[in-house]
Length: 49
Image (cartoon, rainbow, N blue to C red; front, side, top):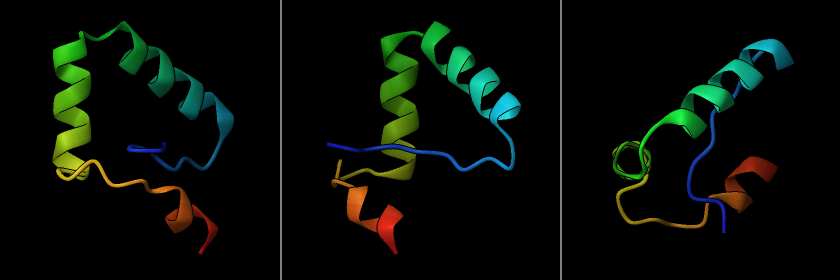
C-alpha cells in the first residue's frame, strides 16, 4: 500500500530526500505521512492519473 510519496525533477534530489527520510525516527515518518494523508489511504491509483 502506498501511503506517501514526493515528486522530484531529478533522481539526485529524490535520493537525497529518501536518505533524509530513512534516517529519521519512526515518529517523524508517521507524522510526515499523517500530514499528507491523515486517513492513510492507498495513493497508488493517484500516481497513474
